[in-house]
Amino acid sequence: MTAIHFEHRGRRLVADLADPLPIGIPLDFGGPQPRFHGAPAASSTALRAGNFLGDTREGGSCNCEQVALVPHCNGTHTECVGHVTDERISITDVLRGGMHLALLLSVRPVEAGSSGEGSEPAPASGDLMVTAASLAAGLAAHQDLSPAALVIRTLPNGAERMSHQYTGPAPAPFLSREAAEWVVEQKIDHLVLDLPSADRADDCGRLTAHRVFFGLPAGSRRASEAKRAHATLTELAFIAPTLRDGWYLLDLQIPAFLSDAAPSRPLLYPVRFE
Image (cartoon, rainbow, N blue to C red; front, side, top):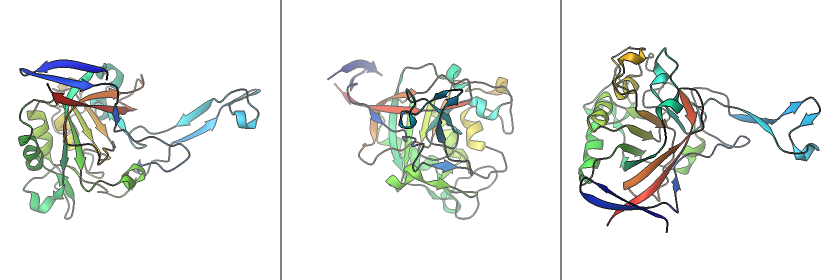
């Protein structure tokens, strides 16, 4: 066991770093993969440059592939406030590394019409939302610590979501405005969702939950107005049913892309009280 011991709010905790639990969807360039917003599938091809061929199966000396993907649409990714601002802020500059105390909560989205919560623009009939009420109820069972990161697993949760094609104006649940405000009130800096987006796919470009989470006024595209420019949002994760709700350390691993988003590999390490 490779353990790390630390203290939080006067409680001594320990986490085993020897067996990380991945919650990112592996991206199979030649097989089934999730997609969102009608984006093309992520793909890879052998590099051909002059006499060089990057495929040993075709006589090349080694394998060397070039890949094409849309980070926001082709699987698990982590983004920053640059996703909704005119300034090109990179996720690499925002997410410097390290581990964050995280709470994993399972919630069941509810129909917008019966939720008592909303968004901007108003949700359509039949839309499903993750609500502040459901998140608050989940946190109530874990009041002993205060998380810096929140991982939300929406129910029902099947393996088919690892290759689901999210099409249409509302192909998946999304956060209510109140839910996004609740996350901010809890001082959550890193939010991980198993949804393709925190917002409705077709929301007339408002991206209400995104702007609330990053501390931007409605409609603002100016990074200088963001009160939470340090925050990160991870979407299209997959949290296996075998992972229990509760406390973990979250390690958000990303490549050094100078882009508002990058494919990511979030890892969870279970935490227990000493």
